[in-house]
Figure 1 (cartoon, rainbow, N blue to C red):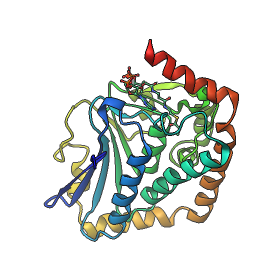
Figure 2 (cartoon, protein in one colour):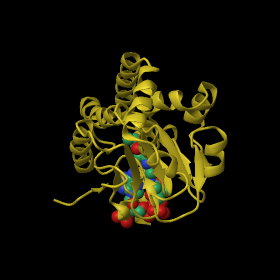
Figure 3 (cartoon, protein in one colour):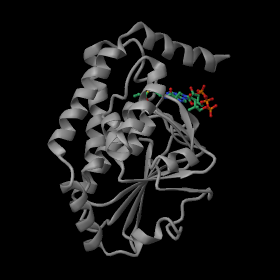
Figure 4 (cartoon, rainbow, N blue to C red):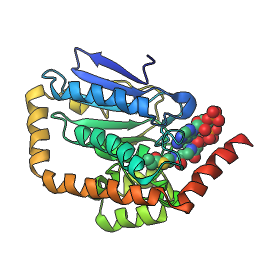
Amino acid sequence: MNNLVKVENSKIEQTTILTLNRPEKRNAISIELINQLKVIIEKLHQDDETKLVIITGEGSAFCAGGDLNDFHGEIDQEKAHELLSQMQEVLWQITTLPMPTIAWMNGLARGGGMELASACDFRYVHESGNYGFTQGKLGISTGWGGGTLLYERIHSQEAYYWLVSADIRSAQVLKSIGFAQATFSTHQLELEHDLIKPFISRSLTQLKHWKSQWLQNQDLQKLKTKMDAEVEACSHMWVSDEHKEAVSNFFKRNKK
Ligand SMILES: CCC(=O)SCCNC(=O)CCNC(=O)[C@H](O)C(C)(C)COP(=O)(O)OP(=O)(O)OC[C@H]1O[C@@H](n2cnc3c(N)ncnc32)[C@H](O)[C@@H]1OP(=O)(O)O
């Protein structure tokens, strides 16, 4: 079995780095990748030693979103619901992990890649990347619960506008609207990086306490209900002609 998600445990720093490992597909999230991620995140829920989880991508991209070969335009509403639910569950499990999580966005992100980043507690973005909730241009909405999570991360007016405009934004803009905590310019993720150091230098007890406080500060039941509603809404849009045409245009464009 290919490791579509690489897992590196750093014992001294008590940090686990998860690297999406399909660089040739810009780390698009296939069904197989979802299954692997699910098992890894489930294990982290039982992990008493890891104090920080970092999610990043191999190669030039953080994540190009759902793999349009698996999440293709010809599936019916029920199947779309089933597939979207699987990744929504992964996002939910990431959101509720008992330790802080960081999306180390090493390069571009689109669609579901932005939803995945939204499930993390903090986001750091490569200064030369570009980033967009592009679902709107594909005739759908966010469908993994990431739209709901976006409203938790930035000002609601800004979240609403970003989802409607579906525009692709620079790292600097992500920082200015508060989606990203900071930008970085390095190519290799180092745990000694100034942006990671504050986490590493805190104790396991401190970090778990702050994470539990963070979770208590949110109405998790309400959040889950809203994420479920998002899956339902997106599954209906999935079967629209506009969406089918957008997916087919993407593959036609790539064949040219
Ligand atoms: C669940 C909701 C969703 O997430 S819907 C999906 C939203 N995502 C998108 O629409 C992104 C589609 N991809 C793109 O726009 C471009 O590929 C981006 C990500 C900008 C990268 O461009 P560029 O660096 O020029 O690479 P490229 O287009 O040549 O792609 C390289 C290979 O990767 C593939 N790829 C990319 N994205 C996806 C995807 N989402 N699903 C499936 N495959 C994807 C391309 O098809 C290409 O593959 P190949 O080399 O032609 O075999």
